[in-house]
Image (cartoon, rainbow, N blue to C red; front, side, top):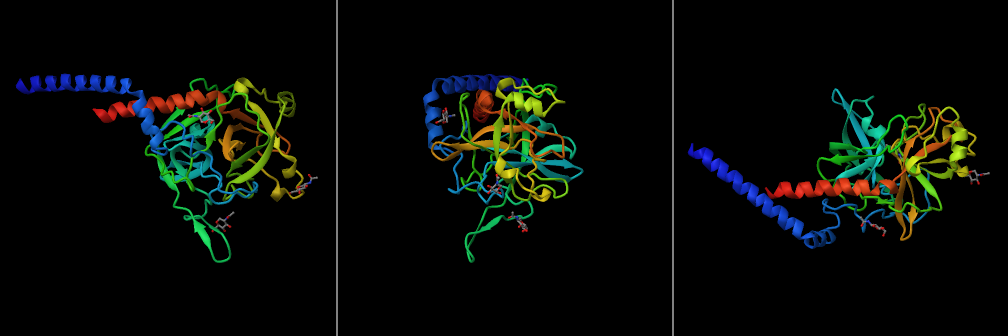
Length: 330
Ligand SMILES: *[C@@H]1O[C@H](CO)[C@@H](O)[C@H](O)[C@H]1NC(C)=O
Ligand SMILES: *[C@@H]1O[C@H](CO)[C@@H](O)[C@H](O)[C@H]1NC(C)=O
Ligand SMILES: *[C@@H]1O[C@H](CO)[C@@H](O)[C@H](O)[C@H]1NC(C)=O
Protein backbone atom coordinates (compact mmCIF):
# COMPACT_ATOMS: atom_id res chain seq x y z
CA UNK A 1 0.00 0.00 0.00
CA UNK A 2 2.63 2.43 1.14
CA UNK A 3 5.00 1.47 -1.66
CA UNK A 4 2.26 2.13 -4.23
CA UNK A 5 1.78 5.62 -2.83
CA UNK A 6 5.52 6.18 -2.96
CA UNK A 7 5.58 4.99 -6.56
CA UNK A 8 2.79 7.37 -7.53
CA UNK A 9 4.58 10.21 -5.82
CA UNK A 10 7.81 9.38 -7.58
CA UNK A 11 5.95 9.31 -10.85
CA UNK A 12 4.41 12.73 -10.23
CA UNK A 13 7.81 14.06 -9.28
CA UNK A 14 9.38 12.64 -12.45
CA UNK A 15 6.64 14.19 -14.62
CA UNK A 16 7.15 17.51 -12.88
CA UNK A 17 10.89 17.35 -13.41
CA UNK A 18 10.36 16.41 -17.04
CA UNK A 19 7.99 19.34 -17.49
CA UNK A 20 10.54 21.67 -15.91
CA UNK A 21 13.23 20.19 -18.12
CA UNK A 22 11.16 20.75 -21.27
CA UNK A 23 10.36 24.34 -20.31
CA UNK A 24 14.01 24.91 -19.51
CA UNK A 25 15.26 23.57 -22.85
CA UNK A 26 12.48 25.29 -24.77
CA UNK A 27 13.38 28.57 -23.15
CA UNK A 28 17.08 28.37 -23.89
CA UNK A 29 17.60 27.94 -27.63
CA UNK A 30 20.56 30.30 -27.58
CA UNK A 31 22.39 28.11 -25.12
CA UNK A 32 22.08 24.96 -27.24
CA UNK A 33 23.08 26.86 -30.37
CA UNK A 34 26.27 27.97 -28.70
CA UNK A 35 27.10 24.43 -27.65
CA UNK A 36 26.77 23.30 -31.28
CA UNK A 37 29.29 25.80 -32.55
CA UNK A 38 31.86 24.79 -30.00
CA UNK A 39 31.64 21.11 -30.87
CA UNK A 40 31.60 20.84 -34.66
CA UNK A 41 31.81 17.03 -34.70
CA UNK A 42 29.86 16.25 -31.54
CA UNK A 43 27.28 14.02 -33.21
CA UNK A 44 24.39 16.10 -31.91
CA UNK A 45 24.71 18.51 -34.82
CA UNK A 46 22.48 18.95 -37.77
CA UNK A 47 24.51 18.99 -40.99
CA UNK A 48 28.14 19.62 -40.14
CA UNK A 49 28.84 22.69 -42.21
CA UNK A 50 32.27 23.93 -41.24
CA UNK A 51 34.01 20.59 -41.68
CA UNK A 52 32.13 19.06 -44.61
CA UNK A 53 33.46 18.18 -48.04
CA UNK A 54 37.13 18.83 -47.33
CA UNK A 55 39.36 17.78 -50.22
CA UNK A 56 42.49 15.80 -49.44
CA UNK A 57 43.88 16.15 -52.97
CA UNK A 58 44.10 19.41 -54.81
CA UNK A 59 44.60 17.77 -58.18
CA UNK A 60 42.06 16.39 -60.63
CA UNK A 61 39.67 13.46 -60.35
CA UNK A 62 41.19 10.14 -61.45
CA UNK A 63 38.92 7.19 -62.29
CA UNK A 64 40.53 5.05 -59.57
CA UNK A 65 39.96 7.09 -56.43
CA UNK A 66 42.72 7.51 -53.88
CA UNK A 67 42.78 6.91 -50.13
CA UNK A 68 40.98 9.77 -48.27
CA UNK A 69 39.44 11.07 -51.50
CA UNK A 70 35.86 10.12 -50.51
CA UNK A 71 35.76 9.89 -46.71
CA UNK A 72 31.97 10.38 -46.80
CA UNK A 73 31.34 7.28 -48.91
CA UNK A 74 29.60 4.54 -46.88
CA UNK A 75 29.03 0.95 -48.00
CA UNK A 76 26.05 -1.10 -46.77
CA UNK A 77 26.19 -4.61 -45.30
CA UNK A 78 23.28 -7.01 -45.74
CA UNK A 79 23.13 -10.09 -43.54
CA UNK A 80 21.66 -13.49 -44.20
CA UNK A 81 22.52 -16.55 -42.06
CA UNK A 82 25.52 -14.74 -40.59
CA UNK A 83 26.97 -13.97 -44.03
CA UNK A 84 27.38 -10.24 -44.61
CA UNK A 85 27.61 -8.87 -48.15
CA UNK A 86 28.70 -5.28 -48.65
CA UNK A 87 27.27 -3.44 -51.66
CA UNK A 88 25.87 -0.07 -52.77
CA UNK A 89 26.61 3.20 -51.04
CA UNK A 90 25.36 6.21 -49.17
CA UNK A 91 26.80 9.47 -47.90
CA UNK A 92 27.77 10.43 -44.41
CA UNK A 93 26.02 13.78 -43.85
CA UNK A 94 26.18 13.67 -40.05
CA UNK A 95 28.08 11.41 -37.64
CA UNK A 96 24.89 9.36 -37.07
CA UNK A 97 23.13 9.60 -40.45
CA UNK A 98 23.79 8.22 -43.91
CA UNK A 99 21.83 9.46 -46.92
CA UNK A 100 20.96 7.00 -49.68
CA UNK A 101 18.10 5.83 -51.92
CA UNK A 102 15.06 3.78 -50.93
CA UNK A 103 16.11 1.01 -53.32
CA UNK A 104 19.28 0.54 -51.25
CA UNK A 105 17.55 0.37 -47.87
CA UNK A 106 14.84 -1.97 -49.14
CA UNK A 107 17.16 -4.31 -51.07
CA UNK A 108 16.52 -7.89 -49.90
CA UNK A 109 18.64 -10.17 -52.13
CA UNK A 110 21.42 -10.55 -49.54
CA UNK A 111 19.13 -10.43 -46.49
CA UNK A 112 18.41 -7.52 -44.20
CA UNK A 113 20.31 -4.24 -44.22
CA UNK A 114 22.32 -4.48 -41.03
CA UNK A 115 25.58 -2.50 -41.23
CA UNK A 116 26.93 0.75 -42.56
CA UNK A 117 30.67 0.58 -43.21
CA UNK A 118 32.28 3.98 -42.74
CA UNK A 119 35.88 4.82 -43.68
CA UNK A 120 36.18 2.06 -46.29
CA UNK A 121 38.33 2.45 -49.39
CA UNK A 122 39.88 -0.74 -50.81
CA UNK A 123 37.35 -3.49 -50.04
CA UNK A 124 39.97 -6.25 -50.33
CA UNK A 125 42.25 -5.00 -47.56
CA UNK A 126 41.64 -4.57 -43.83
CA UNK A 127 44.01 -1.66 -43.43
CA UNK A 128 43.97 0.68 -46.38
CA UNK A 129 47.31 2.25 -47.20
CA UNK A 130 48.62 4.41 -49.99
CA UNK A 131 52.21 4.95 -51.07
CA UNK A 132 53.38 8.52 -50.78
CA UNK A 133 56.82 7.80 -52.23
CA UNK A 134 59.04 4.74 -52.68
CA UNK A 135 59.69 4.47 -48.94
CA UNK A 136 56.78 6.25 -47.32
CA UNK A 137 53.18 5.22 -47.07
CA UNK A 138 50.17 6.46 -45.18
CA UNK A 139 47.49 4.20 -43.72
CA UNK A 140 43.92 4.85 -42.70
CA UNK A 141 42.32 3.65 -39.45
CA UNK A 142 40.27 0.45 -39.78
CA UNK A 143 36.86 0.90 -41.38
CA UNK A 144 33.98 1.12 -38.90
CA UNK A 145 31.13 -1.35 -39.45
CA UNK A 146 28.30 0.25 -37.50
CA UNK A 147 24.94 -1.39 -36.80
CA UNK A 148 21.98 0.24 -38.50
CA UNK A 149 19.54 1.54 -35.90
CA UNK A 150 16.69 2.76 -38.06
CA UNK A 151 15.77 3.36 -41.69
CA UNK A 152 13.73 6.48 -42.46
CA UNK A 153 12.17 6.40 -45.94
CA UNK A 154 10.89 9.68 -47.35
CA UNK A 155 7.12 9.82 -46.60
CA UNK A 156 6.28 10.66 -50.24
CA UNK A 157 8.36 7.89 -51.79
CA UNK A 158 6.49 6.31 -54.68
CA UNK A 159 7.89 3.04 -55.97
CA UNK A 160 5.80 2.99 -59.15
CA UNK A 161 6.60 6.53 -60.27
CA UNK A 162 10.14 6.19 -58.82
CA UNK A 163 9.93 9.60 -57.20
CA UNK A 164 11.17 10.92 -53.83
CA UNK A 165 13.55 7.96 -53.79
CA UNK A 166 15.51 9.11 -50.74
CA UNK A 167 16.11 7.66 -47.28
CA UNK A 168 18.13 8.28 -44.15
CA UNK A 169 19.91 5.46 -42.33
CA UNK A 170 20.40 6.17 -38.65
CA UNK A 171 23.46 4.53 -37.08
CA UNK A 172 23.26 2.94 -33.65
CA UNK A 173 26.41 4.77 -32.54
CA UNK A 174 27.98 7.85 -34.07
CA UNK A 175 30.79 7.23 -36.53
CA UNK A 176 34.22 8.38 -35.37
CA UNK A 177 34.71 11.38 -37.63
CA UNK A 178 38.42 12.20 -37.92
CA UNK A 179 38.12 14.59 -40.84
CA UNK A 180 40.50 12.59 -43.06
CA UNK A 181 39.41 8.95 -43.37
CA UNK A 182 35.87 9.72 -42.22
CA UNK A 183 34.20 13.07 -42.88
CA UNK A 184 30.76 14.34 -43.90
CA UNK A 185 30.02 15.60 -47.40
CA UNK A 186 28.45 19.06 -47.89
CA UNK A 187 24.82 18.91 -48.99
CA UNK A 188 23.48 21.37 -51.54
CA UNK A 189 20.44 23.28 -50.26
CA UNK A 190 20.10 25.71 -53.18
CA UNK A 191 17.27 24.73 -55.55
CA UNK A 192 18.70 26.94 -58.32
CA UNK A 193 22.29 25.77 -58.00
CA UNK A 194 24.06 25.36 -61.35
CA UNK A 195 27.24 23.30 -61.29
CA UNK A 196 29.81 23.57 -64.04
CA UNK A 197 30.65 19.86 -63.87
CA UNK A 198 29.34 16.69 -62.21
CA UNK A 199 31.04 13.53 -61.00
CA UNK A 200 29.87 10.19 -59.66
CA UNK A 201 31.78 7.88 -57.28
CA UNK A 202 30.90 4.27 -56.57
CA UNK A 203 32.15 0.74 -55.96
CA UNK A 204 30.86 -0.52 -59.27
CA UNK A 205 31.69 -2.58 -62.33
CA UNK A 206 30.64 -5.19 -64.85
CA UNK A 207 29.58 -8.70 -63.84
CA UNK A 208 32.65 -10.23 -65.51
CA UNK A 209 35.07 -8.06 -63.54
CA UNK A 210 33.02 -7.69 -60.35
CA UNK A 211 32.63 -4.53 -58.33
CA UNK A 212 35.73 -2.35 -58.23
CA UNK A 213 37.93 -2.71 -55.13
CA UNK A 214 38.17 1.05 -54.71
CA UNK A 215 35.45 3.51 -55.73
CA UNK A 216 35.50 4.51 -59.38
CA UNK A 217 35.01 8.15 -60.24
CA UNK A 218 33.58 9.42 -63.52
CA UNK A 219 32.71 12.76 -65.03
CA UNK A 220 29.06 12.84 -66.01
CA UNK A 221 27.04 15.35 -67.98
CA UNK A 222 23.38 16.27 -67.65
CA UNK A 223 21.03 15.80 -70.61
CA UNK A 224 17.61 17.34 -71.20
CA UNK A 225 14.43 15.57 -70.01
CA UNK A 226 13.42 15.25 -73.67
CA UNK A 227 16.70 13.58 -74.62
CA UNK A 228 16.52 11.33 -71.56
CA UNK A 229 13.01 10.13 -72.37
CA UNK A 230 14.04 9.57 -75.97
CA UNK A 231 16.94 7.37 -74.82
CA UNK A 232 14.63 5.37 -72.53
CA UNK A 233 11.69 4.69 -74.86
CA UNK A 234 10.29 1.78 -72.85
CA UNK A 235 10.20 3.63 -69.55
CA UNK A 236 8.18 6.67 -68.51
CA UNK A 237 10.68 8.92 -66.75
CA UNK A 238 9.32 11.23 -64.05
CA UNK A 239 11.08 14.55 -63.57
CA UNK A 240 9.20 15.40 -60.37
CA UNK A 241 11.03 17.43 -57.69
CA UNK A 242 13.92 18.36 -59.94
CA UNK A 243 14.94 14.85 -61.03
CA UNK A 244 17.32 14.89 -63.97
CA UNK A 245 19.31 12.57 -66.21
CA UNK A 246 23.03 12.22 -66.76
CA UNK A 247 25.26 10.25 -69.14
CA UNK A 248 28.99 9.51 -69.09
CA UNK A 249 31.13 12.41 -70.21
CA UNK A 250 32.91 11.97 -73.58
CA UNK A 251 36.26 11.49 -71.89
CA UNK A 252 35.02 8.06 -70.65
CA UNK A 253 33.17 6.89 -73.72
CA UNK A 254 35.92 6.63 -76.32
CA UNK A 255 37.50 3.45 -75.00
CA UNK A 256 37.77 0.67 -77.54
CA UNK A 257 38.23 -2.13 -75.00
CA UNK A 258 35.14 -3.43 -73.22
CA UNK A 259 37.12 -4.11 -70.04
CA UNK A 260 37.85 -0.39 -69.66
CA UNK A 261 34.33 0.70 -70.42
CA UNK A 262 32.74 2.37 -67.41
CA UNK A 263 29.72 0.66 -65.94
CA UNK A 264 27.72 1.85 -62.95
CA UNK A 265 26.38 -1.59 -61.98
CA UNK A 266 26.32 -1.49 -58.15
CA UNK A 267 26.06 2.31 -58.22
CA UNK A 268 22.72 2.69 -56.42
CA UNK A 269 22.86 5.53 -53.90
CA UNK A 270 26.10 6.87 -55.40
CA UNK A 271 26.81 10.58 -54.92
CA UNK A 272 26.54 13.04 -57.81
CA UNK A 273 28.78 15.89 -56.75
CA UNK A 274 30.75 18.91 -57.77
CA UNK A 275 33.27 21.29 -56.23
CA UNK A 276 31.71 24.27 -54.52
CA UNK A 277 33.34 27.68 -53.87
CA UNK A 278 35.85 27.24 -51.12
CA UNK A 279 37.07 24.00 -52.67
CA UNK A 280 34.60 21.70 -50.94
CA UNK A 281 32.88 18.65 -52.34
CA UNK A 282 29.17 19.42 -52.63
CA UNK A 283 26.56 16.68 -52.92
CA UNK A 284 24.12 17.59 -55.67
CA UNK A 285 22.14 14.35 -56.05
CA UNK A 286 21.99 10.59 -55.69
CA UNK A 287 22.00 7.92 -58.37
CA UNK A 288 18.41 6.69 -58.22
CA UNK A 289 18.22 4.22 -61.11
CA UNK A 290 19.75 3.43 -64.44
CA UNK A 291 19.50 1.20 -67.47
CA UNK A 292 19.06 -2.53 -67.09
CA UNK A 293 22.38 -4.42 -67.04
CA UNK A 294 24.41 -4.60 -69.28
CA UNK A 295 23.99 -0.89 -69.90
CA UNK A 296 25.14 0.61 -73.16
CA UNK A 297 27.65 3.40 -72.81
CA UNK A 298 25.34 6.21 -73.87
CA UNK A 299 22.31 5.20 -71.82
CA UNK A 300 21.16 7.69 -69.17
CA UNK A 301 21.02 7.43 -65.38
CA UNK A 302 18.28 9.12 -63.38
CA UNK A 303 19.33 11.37 -60.50
CA UNK A 304 17.38 12.57 -57.49
CA UNK A 305 18.62 16.03 -56.44
CA UNK A 306 19.18 16.61 -52.71
CA UNK A 307 18.29 20.32 -52.42
CA UNK A 308 14.48 19.76 -52.46
CA UNK A 309 14.92 17.32 -49.55
CA UNK A 310 17.30 19.41 -47.46
CA UNK A 311 14.59 20.56 -45.02
CA UNK A 312 13.28 17.01 -44.67
CA UNK A 313 16.79 15.73 -43.78
CA UNK A 314 17.55 18.45 -41.25
CA UNK A 315 14.02 18.05 -39.82
CA UNK A 316 14.53 14.32 -39.20
CA UNK A 317 17.94 14.88 -37.60
CA UNK A 318 16.74 17.80 -35.46
CA UNK A 319 13.62 15.96 -34.24
CA UNK A 320 15.75 13.01 -33.20
CA UNK A 321 18.25 15.27 -31.47
CA UNK A 322 15.48 16.86 -29.39
CA UNK A 323 14.02 13.48 -28.47
CA UNK A 324 17.48 12.38 -27.41
CA UNK A 325 17.94 15.44 -25.19
CA UNK A 326 14.68 14.82 -23.30
CA UNK A 327 15.53 11.15 -22.85
CA UNK A 328 18.89 11.81 -21.28
CA UNK A 329 17.35 14.21 -18.77
CA UNK A 330 14.92 11.69 -17.23
C1 LIG B 1 25.65 25.46 -44.72
O1 LIG B 1 26.28 26.42 -45.51
C2 LIG B 1 25.53 26.85 -46.61
C3 LIG B 1 26.41 27.75 -47.48
O2 LIG B 1 27.30 28.52 -46.73
C4 LIG B 1 24.28 27.55 -46.10
O3 LIG B 1 23.50 28.02 -47.17
C5 LIG B 1 23.48 26.56 -45.27
O4 LIG B 1 22.36 27.18 -44.73
C6 LIG B 1 24.34 25.97 -44.15
N1 LIG B 1 23.61 24.90 -43.49
C7 LIG B 1 23.52 24.78 -42.17
C8 LIG B 1 22.76 23.62 -41.66
O5 LIG B 1 24.05 25.56 -41.41
C1 LIG C 1 43.39 -3.09 -53.31
O1 LIG C 1 44.05 -4.03 -52.49
C2 LIG C 1 44.53 -5.17 -53.22
C3 LIG C 1 45.06 -6.18 -52.19
O2 LIG C 1 46.10 -5.62 -51.44
C4 LIG C 1 45.56 -4.75 -54.23
O3 LIG C 1 46.00 -5.87 -54.97
C5 LIG C 1 44.94 -3.73 -55.17
O4 LIG C 1 45.94 -3.23 -56.04
C6 LIG C 1 44.33 -2.58 -54.39
N1 LIG C 1 43.59 -1.76 -55.36
C7 LIG C 1 43.80 -0.47 -55.53
C8 LIG C 1 43.10 0.19 -56.65
O5 LIG C 1 44.55 0.16 -54.80
C1 LIG D 1 39.64 9.83 -75.33
O1 LIG D 1 39.98 9.67 -73.96
C2 LIG D 1 41.26 10.13 -73.59
C3 LIG D 1 41.42 9.86 -72.10
O2 LIG D 1 41.18 8.56 -71.80
C4 LIG D 1 41.41 11.61 -73.92
O3 LIG D 1 42.72 12.01 -73.61
C5 LIG D 1 41.11 11.84 -75.39
O4 LIG D 1 41.16 13.21 -75.65
C6 LIG D 1 39.73 11.29 -75.74
N1 LIG D 1 39.46 11.46 -77.16
C7 LIG D 1 38.36 12.01 -77.62
C8 LIG D 1 38.25 12.09 -79.10
O5 LIG D 1 37.48 12.43 -76.92
